[in-house]
Image (cartoon, rainbow, N blue to C red; front, side, top):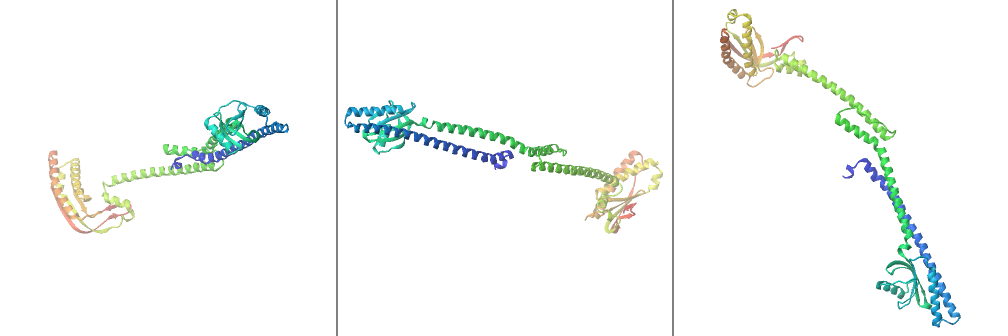
Length: 423
């Protein structure tokens, strides 16, 4: 999950850094160990050489005593030991070197400089003497950790320790390790710096594509393009992205154009509907837009057909001015048409002062006949409201007659393609 949330630069770092660090660390470790082993071998051989030189000088002193038959003479024996001590002092080259000899009872009979042994240090030395352990050893002397080459000189009953402080002995090794660590750190820093630069260069085209995509999503501006930086896979990616955005822009422009045309067409259709609903029933208009090729085909239906007319309309019209007559008729038709349409009726036509309406087409309902009767009764009730309006205007009242027939008829658009009438 963590890797999935990481950026591509971080992933490159995770892949490349181990490839860089592993050989560097391995080289540093191998170099450090090789240097340590090499220097340790040389230093060990150097201590061993000093031990051999000291042991050779002590043997010469002993042979000199033996050749003069003075080995039992205490004075000459002490003089020989003193000579060995002086030779040991001359062998030391630094203040950290220490050569000393210990007898089996733990007495220090020879030393190149004064020092004190702790209890633990004496125990360790006593153990080495008791077990006749010679050669390379590590021990503590005078509170300091030391490395030593141990040899035994039986004539004097000495166990000789040629020692050097451990930190001095390994100083060159530690210096090398320190330098290796510094070089390793510098190498890693340089590698990291170069990796940052190179990953930035490599991922720049990808970052440009991401930035362009984000900008497009934010601003909906499909004119954005990315700069093609390299002629490689990332360059092909940028070029392909530009082609894709170009095609999307063309498609978007086509969609906008189509949407505009659709909106305009819808607005025109709605305008046509609004106009023709005044002349043709809404359901008929819906059928026309849904299936225009069937509009000239009639069909048999069981309908309720309602006729109403104004009694003595000729006499009434002779008593009114034309403008008053038109106003009264419009008011009368408005009330009656609203009543008919409120009962799901369709006003087919006006025949002078008469109204023809039908129930059951183009949409059929189970209660068409019943609704036609309700419409007729409500027309008689609303006539009273109209007559009150007529009286207020000083005009004669209307009386109407209503007839309803229920049966099978042929209903549909009658006429031609240029002029039709739904009846």
